Image (cartoon, rainbow, N blue to C red; front, side):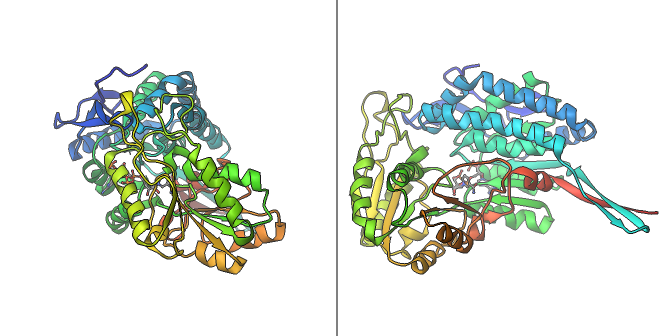
Length: 485
Ligand code: NDP
């Protein structure tokens, strides 16, 4: 199923791959070369309407299909993703710019796990009974909502797309999904997989195109009763302003500016290795990366020395090459945004310890969009560079003296997605974890993920939780039934 060059991606509606109603297509770029390599539908509300009609019809049957039968189909989709792991990883790397090695190790295996996890979770999803002595019995039905919208970003394309779609389908809903216009390829390949797996027509519909056109048509469609969105805080706010007055269920996973808090008593080598990953994995384009690094004073100089040396050793290169650690930035626009923040950091008095520039490659990647991994020191915790999301390979490092002080710094942003704490003092780990304003805390680790746990943020990082039972509750409506005895 490898994709031909200059593929024209199609929408997946009512079980078929179809052209957009307008007949118009958008260019899709390969970030590593800066060249157009395929095209995607420039869909609009007509395509969303066709998808809703298909989903409405499909819901009559899918909502009555047993959990066991839904589970079988979702497992089949997982198997087919796994069987095509190499092709999907290659496509993800071409489309997004990430190292193909990373896509093989993380992105595509996680898409498999998302389907497997929810294919089995739904078999164990139970609800409560509330008995009123000998008087009455209440039981809760958890029924699918109907048609739901899933909108996802470009940084972990298939990984985050399936993280929404799998639980929505498992719970018996029909889905209208929109991947990011910047990274549509693996969602297209998923539609081919769903057809092969025997997913009934109209149960999943994938409409490609621009956020303000397709995304907003999904958000405002009156028959789409829930929206699960992952993306930027600004877009999340726009979606809420339309969907909340329509009383839609909303799950919003938004931006972050996560703190990485390092106490002097930590396991230094382990911390260094992991901090390098939490700073620069996927070019720093992971919502869970830790771009604000706070280091306790006694180890500050040692940290700066080693961390900068290790950062300078990271290879920025062709995503296809095995040795590449940082691939291309997803778009020219995003590359510009990252470089803008580096210049802002300088204006704000920051000292660039390494990086800070475009990384100019040769050969086939000479026109690609690369940025050097960048480490900055000397900035106050409350300057713009330390408050706004950059979402690239740029970290700032700041010393601190006291626990109280670093908690204040960590909690100072509008965001509250995740945090990392490094310490061998068990009591301190518990104390600090409780006081951090965020949805996820990693102690002496980073990005260790158990799919049963609640996932999401507080403050402007979002509303609601994904993962485990939380997301199955989100994608179902509970109905209490009382029987008088
Ligand atoms: P965007 O908010 O720009 O886009 C996310 C999705 O929303 C895309 O599919 C986009 O389409 C679509 N969209 C854009 N405008 C609208 C609209 N008006 N109505 C409906 N949909 C719309 O985010 P990015 O793709 O730039 O992703 C990066 C952001 O995602 C970062 O802020 C990052 O922190 C966040 N993120 C959060 C995660 C979390 O779990 N909390 C995980 C991963 C990323 P199009 O591509 O066509 O613009």
